[in-house]
Amino acid sequence: MTIFSDLESEVRSYSRLWPVVFDRAENSRLFSEDGRTYLDFFAGAGALNYGHSNAFLKQALLDYIVRDGVSHALDMLTVARRDFLETFQDVLLTPRGLQYKVVFPGPGGANAVEAALKLARRVTGRQSVVSFTNSFHGMTLGTLAVSGNATKRAAAGVPLTLTTAMPYDGYPGIGETGPRHLDRLLSDGGSGLDRPAAVIVETVQGEGGLRTAGAGWLRELADVCKRHEVLLIVDDVQMGCGRTGPFFSFEDAGITPDMVCLSKSIGGFGLPLALTLIRPELDVWKPGDHNGTFRGVSASFVTGAQALRSYWSDGTLEKSTRERGERIAAALGAIADDHSEAGLEVRGRGFAAGLRFATPGAARAVCVAAFESGLLMETSGAAADVAKLLPPLTISNDDLDEGLDIIRRCVGAVLARSK
Image (cartoon, rainbow, N blue to C red; front, side):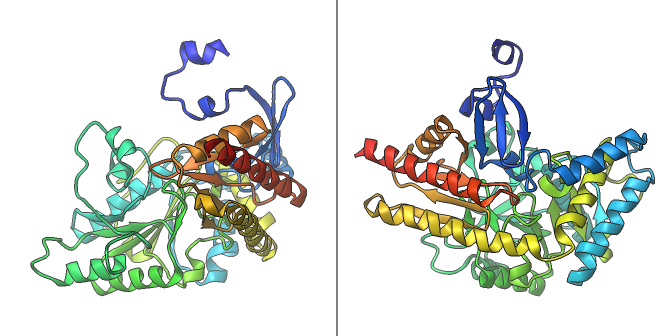
């Protein structure tokens, strides 16, 4: 264990919450080098929607490596790149009537968001961007500027400008919805709010306490953006790829964003890949205007395409996620009811769910107790007051029930100690 503390930077975080050395993993379970088994309700912060070492994806990757498939090609044309694009179009875009062009901006979600912000400013000629309270979009300077968490913003070390925060759905004390508030300000020449290049939003705030925007709220926001000729960006980095049920988390709201940011599970196997989807008329870039060494990892193209074929060619996974998401919500609701005096609140949607605790430190204490009981989960929210669940979408019912039972027992134990 000492090599990690001796050589690695103090910036590491998850290893402090789970101080064991993991050796291997399969679907919803991780195995430490000393042989202990842990249920994974973290799933790589949403990068492992199809579980660890998924057999379908692993075999496709092994076959590609064995035949000496191109491993690195920048944005050169390759068979793997073509297969991914064709599969993405045939499985996702065409059936949904979506017409997007695909940008490969780099390996991570922050790259996808940075590309969207950069392009929005270029297309509109405007500089400012509207984001929302409690949002999180990444740890680069551009993405921190549109994030709400004060602690994370402070890590920038420089002023974060050219952004304005609006109240997210359910934000207290505003007296009107965020979209109506934005509409009123943009319609008032004396409000001091210049028309922005874009509005960026998460349909469920994964790092912001699992707050959820209602379908009507999202439709209202899309209408305001259209009325004022402002581009709408949906950050689907964590909530996309089926995490809330449908592949795109905004589908149930019936909206079509101008840009969509994807990463995490789009690579299927947990390998790095990010996409920025843009309406064709927004593609004003010239060759090389936005680039990066890893703007297309071939192995991720292979496993990403295989994931789309294996899980999104029909509605089986979506149906399962919706149904079992309701089961998760019901189980968390029962826990909240059992401890009604503690004022627990169920948050999230689908396989992105959690419990918000009124008692300071209780959510973290539950996560610590869960780890000691063989379950990995983390906190969420600016105050770390939400115990957050992100199980793999492919988890078995038995493993799901076992994890939920561990949470039930840990919540009971933690709340009993706090009385």
